[in-house]
Length: 240
Image (cartoon, rainbow, N blue to C red; front, side, top):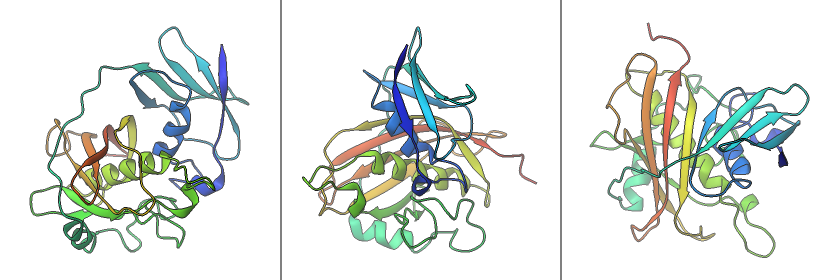
């Protein structure tokens, strides 16, 4: 049974010419009930209608023209690893160590972590303890005229923070989100600065072949947890 439709415009690119995984997952999740984990099955097409269809257990996001399955969601018992918060100045300082400011950036057109002027600037750098962090604020485009904030921007930001955590292990390594789950705990605030932190979660601290886990969390300036995510990543190819 069809539940609705999703449309990802060019603005919400991740990899060049494709939709950003975290943002698209947030659109898909609007049709879901209860905790769900979302598997990314194929590159996300831009400017095309994607159908949300109910399954026996969960739902699918399907390209309407071709029937290609883009994402699958299934009920999930939430299990989010925890970490400690850091002061915002530490997150700002960590960002100065971002490793991907030049041609090494794997997704330079990403609206969340890319290098273009309109991007959200999710450029995490290393902390002393192996985690990565960056300061982040809600972009103006995510705030409606009545002051409501689209939390899809945080889904995207946590995705990118996790991606750069896994990518920076042993040098630059292009990788893709394979599984993603998010929990938004508190409403976002327009005038707040957050610390985004990513780490290995409960997985191994390094790549296992082409596989790696990550966790991410957003804390407000008082150190309160606002949102959290867990993800599973696949490297594009074995590292030389």
